[in-house]
Image 1 (spheres, rainbow, N blue to C red):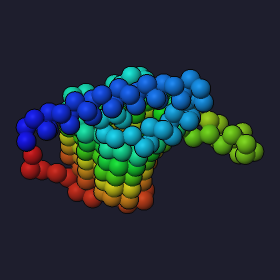
Image 2 (image 1 turned 90 degrees about the horizontal axis):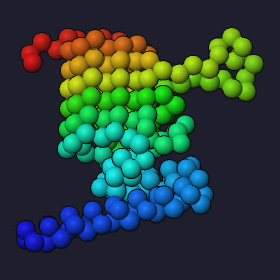
Image 3 (image 1 turned 60 degrees about the horizontal axis):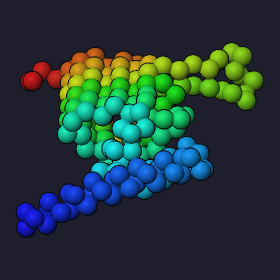
Image 4 (image 1 turned 90 degrees about the vertical axis):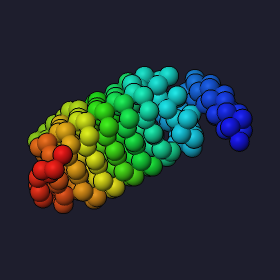
Length: 191
C-alpha cells in the first residue's frame, strides 16, 4: 500500500508541473483571464504550484481547495498565505490589492475578499472615487462559510468570523463577530 501511495504522490507532482505548463501556455496564447479560468478546474496539488509559480507566496503545510476564483490581477503576487493554512472550496479573491493571510488560518468555503471599490461608469464616481486597500487576516483566525471581507479590514489574531457575515471594520483579537454588517458577539477567553 505504501508503494501505491508513493506512486500516487509522484503522479500528482508530475501532473502539477504539466498543469503549470498548460497554465503558462494558455496565458501566453489566450491571456491571463483564460488561464485564470483554467486554474479553477485544477486539483489541489496543481493549484498550489500554479499560484506559487505565478507570484503568490504560500507557506508550508497549506491545504488549498479547488474552485478558487481570482479577479483583478495579472499574476498572483498580491496573495500571501502563511504556514499551515486551509483555504476552502470556491473562495473569491479580488487581488487589486494584497490579501495577506497569516499562519494557522482557516477559511471556510465560498468566502469572498474584496480589496477595492470602483463605481467606474456611474456618475456617483465623482462623489465616491475608486479606492483600494489590503485585507489582513492575522494568525489562528477562522473565517466562516459565505463571509465577505471588505477592503482595509484587519482580522486580528485568534478571532472568529461567523458564517454569512459581512466584515466592514477591523475585528479585535480573541473576538467572535457575526451578522451584516459584522458586530462583536463575544470575547474568547479560554486560549
